Image: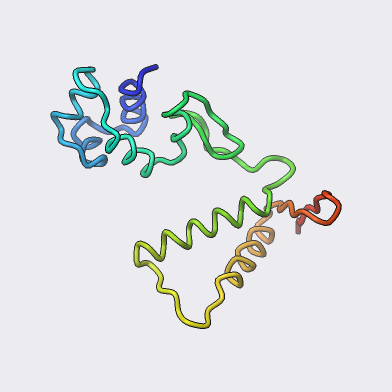
Length: 149
């Protein structure tokens, strides 16, 4: 499947018109039409815009592969769920750090002197487990411990 076809599939899966999808990508409507028709190659700007708005499709858009266990799906796939063994602590920590960094960049939160964000990370892990999540944490000797409620 060509990149233009993937863009069209995402647009249709989202239930958007070409106009609405072009606006979402910050691309001129006529340019977007040309992408779908195949008169113009999809620009890197449009590609990056789409992967920023839908990071869950990044791997599929670039390689046609999916990895649902790490959240990389194709349009129409169900949202990935936690594996039966749980979520690795480092994955949860990385997701929290990315969310925190993005929130600061967007001005949603403002860091204050003396506030230790690792405490927030600990709280997130605690709440995750309290809500029924299974957290896999490495321990010495290469073993792993699963934390559950």
